[in-house]
Length: 262
Length: 362
Image (cartoon, rainbow over all chains, first blue to last red; front, side, top):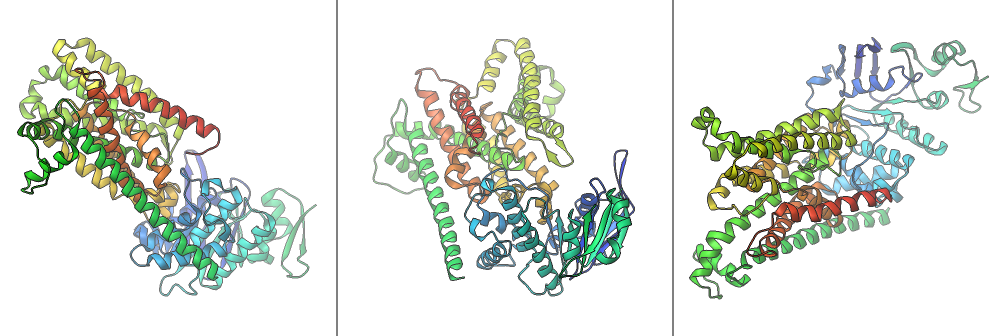
């Protein structure tokens, strides 16, 4: 279990997080929703161990994140950043191989290469393997970064053995076209099938409703709602949190709720 | 699937070929420059003769005859000078490459961000005020105080520039360069003050520091500076993998399991150490740390595991060649090496900026 309890974060006078709690279990996809400035990325940074909250604690398998050695943590959770730029032109395959860094010594070069190639295929960027990262478009970069974090977390393995694995995705679809938005979330679902706990910050409520097991809605640093898509996505909640009047309908084939602005 | 597998083995082969090519090319250039540097001068010594003299020191006889005069010149004058050139060039180049990787900033250079001038100011202060530092010099001999001061000056300026440019763990490229400009202005004012206060002899010493020269090279000065340069440069080599991860960004490197803060501190201190020691030995030599990594990247690529050792070899090569020019073009006088390096580095810097503007990347 990767969990955060009663997290309080202040940046100067601004109180960004006011005590939300959140847990991700292996094998589930959790989507974090909320308007701009709700504290989603800050909460993700706390769960990633990058940011230490002023109050409250984030823990992995019952052990505070700060107490984990960085490399042991890196073998158990990977973080997809919102944006990632490279100062120098690294080939795409090398960027994905960087994801294998925490496995140095425990995994052979040949295995690392094979894993990197498989993850490139999963993220649908095999054709870019030899391109320089700096020459890619925003969406292509995002998919290459996805391949990198998949390689880090041993995506291809059906189970991590005694090593629980978590994938934290900060707006993984923000630069992607429609087809790749769905491809990315299907990858998240496949990861969950292989026992990886996935937490993704999303802006598209309909995308979240289609792929997530659970939704967590943040509003002004606090938890506004949590539960299955059907329970969470109500007209009242969306109007209250996003300040937007909507109708809730059903997806014609999947049956999950879909949000239509009026 | 088989086509993908084929693709990968080709990739691995290509990477290996590139590594071997770069290492052998820079290695060959370095060997040639070294033999040229020790061989060229008032007393000519052929490459074979140089090798024979060096081999003779360890009791090996090579089939190239040499005179006693050649042996004396090589061992007493050329060799320490060349070795200082090698160490300083290699150390400046690798710290430039490491700083560029650390700051994710292709324009970082020990001199550009004020480290070298900070070191020079501290050294200048010791030279000019050394007489009045009786209390200190009673404890620490001047020969040790100079490099120590240069190191502290370099470290202090680095930390100030770094602190100004960093916020929330991110270093702002433009701010850092501007902070470097400001620190250079401040330290230049300090150096100016030292020049103003100095007497004739001190002025002569100061000039040596500010313009840079390998001319002061002796076995003694080499012995004092070499440990810092060798240890610092070799220690920087160990950071190739974290530097690669840092190309993704600081928090990304942290997510990959690297201890980023520790790495950053270590690299900044090591870069200040070698730059301080280099300034203590040869004075300020600018642009080696800027030019060398860029040239090497063109051939070896940005992977620090290959980049760092190649930078050491090419930095040594560049400084040997520059020194060769410095001591031969205006015979019998010597041109300060900084003037030469600035003639190469300034236009190179402009070329980098123009290339960037055309969208060519670094």
